[in-house]
Image 1 (cartoon, one colour):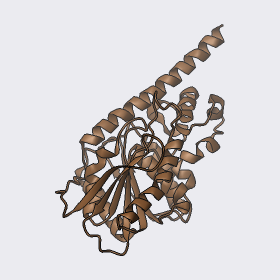
Image 2 (tube, helix red, strand yellow; image 1 turned 135 degrees about the vertical axis):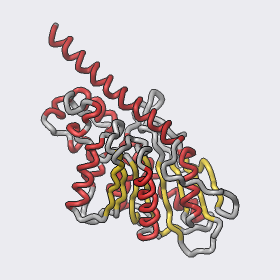
Image 3 (cartoon, helix red, strand yellow; image 1 turned 180 degrees about the vertical axis):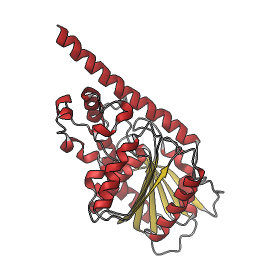
Image 4 (cartoon, one colour; image 1 turned 30 degrees about the vertical axis):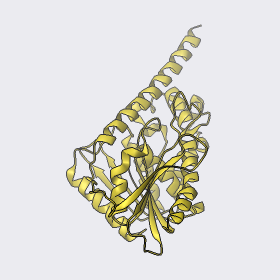
Length: 319
């Protein structure tokens, strides 16, 4: 009787950890949608570009994208920038990134914001993995729509923030080899880049195999047991959502930014990605915001550097 009670208590703690994670990420999404550390606002009018909203790329109600095309339609080919929204995989919308998408478009790129099916009571089967498949499926539709409008695409960058940063990294490393548009680089901020439970200290996953199994199972869409966590035998189950695992010598140049005091996306979880980039000789820049958390709000110098690096990468790689 005592062992059953103990087991039930562990499961309860696991669910509480998972709930705390989701709630924290949703709060971060609300913050990120009202705070713009990159100050990307541009004066938008017909002389800059045109936006087409809620275009379909699949059968799901969330399978929609917004497409921003520059006013100059005289070029033979264009670069595409896909930016994926934040929201802890449970909230957020492409409309929250309208300003940065306009900024890309004002620089002469075709830009796209993509929605994906959010995890929640209405979609309990959604996971980071299923969301990543939706992002993969959106790219051919974006390409076809852009070409129909007179904007042939021959190169792309993929990017995002928080949850969107995680999905961008997955596409850049896992799906780039099969992308219909050559991926030239990825840039992202504060996206979960790896899923090693010992790094997720801010949620206590290093101390609770039950919490780690609940959270990583929900994220991956695979069954991961506490015993698998304890024996560190779950790499195959999180492979499809772990950016660091997919890095190789052919991976695209990478720009990433993280806050040293992030309690939402575990700060130590970026280290396996950085190690993989170093070990494989992948060109990359890492900007650490020493006084900031998930919102990257306390380091103006680093925010300016990140924006400058985005411009540099866009000019150097998909430019």
